[in-house]
Amino acid sequence: MPSVSNAITLGVALSMVGSSTALSEFKANWGSPFGGTREMFYQTDIKDVQSHCRLREDLASAKETHPTLIVQHFNDTKEYNVFVGNDITPWNHHLYPYHSGWRKTVPLDTGLKHSTCKFKADDKTGGNGEWSVRRIGPLTSHGGYDWWQFASKDVFNLQDAIDEHGQIYLVDSYIAGVLEDGTVLEHPPIHVHHIHVVPPKEYLRYQWPFTGEEEMQKNFRDRLHSNWVPYMPNYFIDRHGEWDMCGYDKSGKCYTEQLPPGYGFLVDEAPDFEGEVNDVRATDSEPLVWYFEIGVRYVPVKGNNLKPASMLVSLEAHALIQSGQQFTYENYYFVPTAYNGITWYESIMPVDGTLLRIKSHNHMTLMNSTYLFDASAEELGLLNPEWPPLRPDGIKTRAPVLDIGKMNFQNFDELMDYLMENLKKHGKDESHLKCRINTNMVEVDGFQFAQYPHDECKFWNLRKGAKYTSVAFQQYIPGTDGGPGPHKPLASTGGKVAEALPMHNQWFLIYDSNDYTSHYDVKTADESFYDAKILGMMMAYIQKVHRGVYELHKQTTAEATMSAVWNYAIPATVAVLTYLFTAWFRVTFFGQPKNGRAF
Image (tube, rainbow, N blue to C red; front, side, top):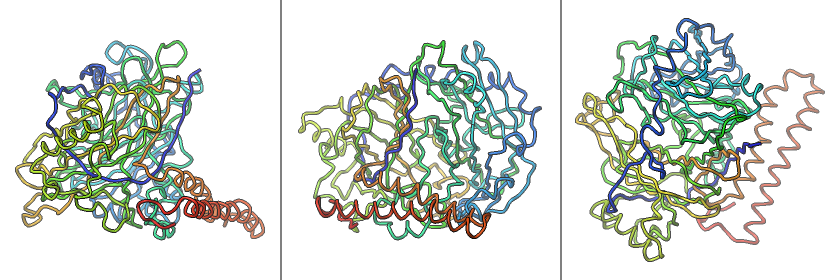
């Protein structure tokens, strides 16, 4: 019987830098080394799925029909950053920790509704299995790059199917903002900032008792601080803004996303989800009334000749979380708009397997191209001592973007030539460049908007313990207006563009683990894996303490005292002492870490 493995691998970014092109002819293959085509991954029209449903007619109270649902709204990024917004699922407001920024939002009952739909797939909708779809709304937005936050348990309404079959494969999905009649809203105006479908966790993302904004984080900001956030996104179904598959072939179709043929994501528990969506129109636009829809096609494991697919989410690790500033929770790094630059990070492959497809997440208006090498940073020549220092303060908390001019390169082609020459010196060639992605955008009303990336990926036998390196060539590419978007045209900022804008450089590796198991892992750029494991254990106890303190008032004094000592104080003390002893042991017998952090 197939099995499911969920893992989280934490670490700290080793280094950062980036690059571009002077290679063999680019042959886009949708990230699949097996001759990927659009039809291989994007075939079913969302309209054909919706035609089987009565999502508009069946809307009912979300409180009654989807009780775990969370929906928050913030009018713009400024208010989002400081948690000035509304909780439009007020029946769950008490579940936000008392110290959490989300607890600051104002409960507002808008009469939110929800509907579901299930039906057997036909030839137009996949031909096998069943679809399960949810709709949430109505939601009313006015542009301005507002923020809608969502989360819930059992995102796809699959518990009954899992109870019946034990294990199922998820093979096809869609995530979209839609009008009342089901018309899918493209990007623009609706930007799916991110939607992450994850294995079920103890708490939903916004309800974790420990949110990463506590005093302990401040005290240890110079060390492994990205690991202090207990929610980690080991997602296996995702959507990000650039993966809007509406209007791709000018047919008017919007496509669902399928796994590589012959594979499915194996689940034996109903997954959770969390995410954010923006209305990217100009501030104070006419009201847009829309709905959030999410659907999946699944098949039972028994009777279907599929293999389990796995997903490795490979992230930068440069978080600089600041208490009470939600914008910093997104784990961005910032790209200067005045010059072309490079970022990079090296990591260690935590899995074995055969690559099936790679997706990525980058902000296209800040990227020329990005590359994933089956090689170390040293082999690429990225440890050049003549280049400007990466982190003058010695604290690796965010990704620097180096000016390629100050590195004595006139353009990205020269830089790529340099990288490839260094590979050859180490006995490697272009076959070790496993994936390359070129930016792709569409200009609408003078502004650039991200589209699906142009990507080419090669066959890759993933080897646990091998070093790999992500390299990004950073370049601000505005539209004719010059501003970053309709919410902030250049005229509104006195003709000046922000000195730096937020960026991600992330890779999502879909692979066959060759052990008849689905693994859902997240891996940050790594340096101190063992420290992270201990911090993870410590975090589990700290979470208990924070939730426990909040709930102790329900007990008598004697009960509360015993509960606090036995369930919280003792385990937390053991965790802290364990961490301190391990840190002392490492420094005493192995010396200080190379980057100069002190324990």
